[in-house]
Length: 406
Image (cartoon, rainbow, N blue to C red; front, side):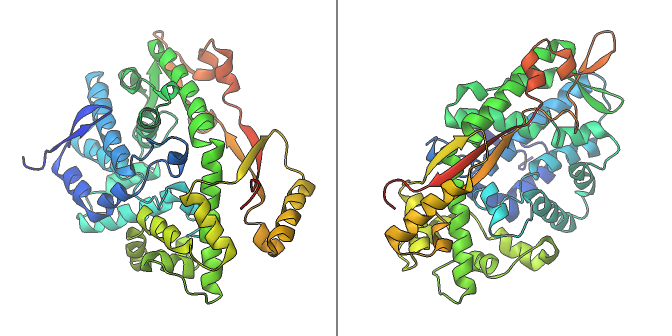
């Protein structure tokens, strides 16, 4: 009974830990690390309130999963006690592999290793410690369990992950347009032939959900200032890695040094490397930025100061790819003004693209269940033309360059 604790959450109120296994997983050092990983990366540069953590989010997901299981059982969907516990564990641990500042690290401290791959490694390690009690949770997380609706609840177009982060991120950023009614959505869920469906009367809630997701991506997750800040952070670590490999001594924490010194791919992730990764969090990065701003390397020190003082690069969004000559003009100007090399100047002048697709119908549909028993994809069921439009990817291009002076 002592393990059935209660969290007081600003979004849902009181959240009860459903069983002893979930309590023990929350108590584990791997999960407690999520208290030191920010949920929204560099978004606090735009929205000062966005300092909530992956820990908050994972607990919120468990709460929504509890509500979902309750609703589905009430509607006659058979879910065993073992499956229930596995669903809680899978959704609790779905983000456990995130590195510092969330997505920024997937492109800099590890070599093309996604947070989902690292989450799976953590889950497999925990499964050894917890006497194989996470075997079913891992099957659900990987999407291989035969009852597909359970996999959809953990990773799908209408999963508990999205249902929580849209509502939570909307709350902490103050962006009201992203505030979905996740409780209403959950109440409308049902299961047909072991696949998730939404009852007909929930169609407007689904429309609101897809619209809110589109809005949050353009307005929050892909906000141009957030993009610049994240790109600068990636470039700080790229430069640090370059200097370390050239034999330059940097003041740095041991876990961060390990990942910058070594080219770590998914094949290298044994238990020892996983243990070093567990020690990495946002504080390693922030303390490095504070130290490196005083380094005598022009690129490293200027990049760090830009982030710490929020004196970021200028960014322009365009509908077409950026012309090479535009980039070269800015690069040439930097080279002449600061007597740096072209390669060094490219740390401050670069282009890229961002893409947003609010609904991806080909991967896992959001299906609407009519009273007649007919099932139809939301793009056909909705009378809103823009839902069909939102299922097409939209790409924007950006160019970043210094303001008047570095």
